[in-house]
Length: 459
Ligand code: ARG
Image 1 (tube, rainbow, N blue to C red):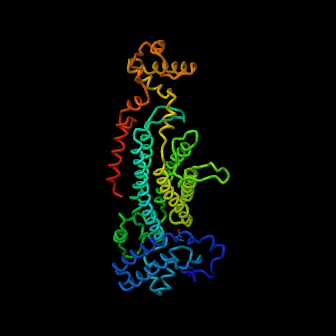
Image 2 (image 1 turned 120 degrees about the vertical axis):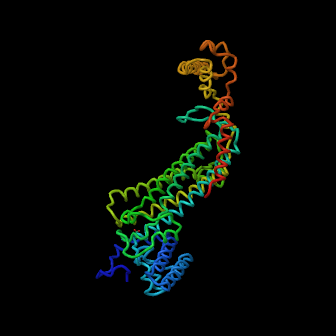
Image 3 (image 1 turned 30 degrees about the horizontal axis):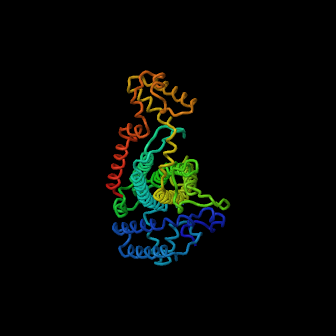
């Protein structure tokens, strides 16, 4: 017999049970549900709402249920709807009617809101650790490949030379912003809704702050109607996850590109590649492609959650039960992606020779030549036009822009002097000696700062 159908003459229809159960997925909330229940019943005893003896019986019973769940001996039953009812029903079997006192001064509405917050808090902690680990690998690769020069691209066209370390450290920055977003979400999630009851609060003399303290939460929610129907902490996690997956996906795209025969800038370790079922020569970057593809489901989950919340009247509505599967899927996808990309990056090797080959086309130094003329006193727009003409000339004569004799340069602009010959790839990189620039000293500084920052970070 259901715990909550006292006012009905009939049991729910089979189809309704299938439609409304969530135990098949919300069982992952059990550690948080039990943690919350134990804190709640301890508070009920402290406030004299239940006796110490009753609280002890309930807590011991909850520990037994926890053990069964941990050991996989717990029997799930779809008739029992969700994890909250399932645990309470098992508690009743184990300790008898006193189990019924656990739900005093509480509703499933504030209970599930709490469970979701505790779960999300734990997952934020894991996510932060994994982002941190990935950032460490990025810095290590940047350091290992110090001095390697490569073409930088805009519009996927050769643009200006940069250091490979500079390129890699760009990802450090992206993942750092992700780290900050998750860390920020932590402060909002770590607030206890318990005591909100079904929607209006509780008529008992509960000590909400004390429960929050027991759960190591930073405070209590200030409006019961908002508290039982707010799922912003899920949206915070999902939005941060969507942005983080977007960064993973950008990295994935470059891995796919860089490991092609045409680029050849990077080689993946065999452990992070797959073969083809038909073409024996293939070493495919499926793992990176999957990261790119899985970004779609994380975006989809965010969209689904936003759509569930849109237009939802106050306060709790059962629509909210649909919040969980997307969240669990996003968490699983993101944590796994962070692990996989960390390993893939850590074991990858970069190919300086291939990068050097791409730098052979010296038109990549056209901007440096324009800057050279500017430093000789020519307005930039004129310098841009002059060098454009030199690029055009060199193309027609099938030579590099740096291979012309000084007299030829002078035909384009009188300001050219012998020192134009100093322009080369390494000169170009060294000259961008400004905070955030690609000059070796600047990149070394970025790496040094990043290492210090990671070492000091408390996680
Ligand atoms: N399984 C439900 C959920 O996830 C728990 C809350 C049920 N509350 C209710 N009023 N039916 O939302």
